[in-house]
Image 1 (cartoon, rainbow, N blue to C red):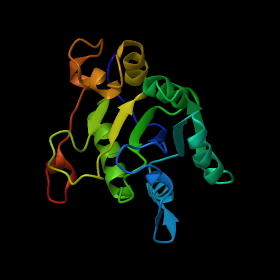
Image 2: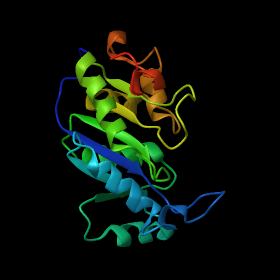
Image 3: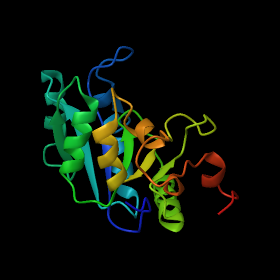
Length: 195
């Protein structure tokens, strides 16, 4: 495995569920003319480098509302175990042929399409398997996303424990060429930053 990522198709996987300890049902809460989830889906679809949007949710009855809400939309809904985020993410990955995935959560309605495109562009320009926007807290909450090469995700799914999927990609013991792992902070993604 060479660890590099060449330009290709990109899918956004949005992790969504209705259960939340702080604000149950926030995913489908109205926010202006649309729900929080609608904003995230629409903004992901606005990114020029994105070919499809997949919403990964659980098989819990409360998440039936997410699937029903997205019926007839252009987003694909994939459902899996409520107790196994990794397995659910794996099902979403298996539903696409994309070369890379952009991972976001459903509670980020201010997600920036330009930021998605820029992060994908960095992955393409540098040939890296991992780009993240907010690992060190310099970006505002809600702008966080991760771009991950398919092959790296497949390896991480095999080796990850618990819910730490992309942490497994950043883990040095993972079987990836270390030159293919790039963690991007906010400076590289803001106007005027190094390019």
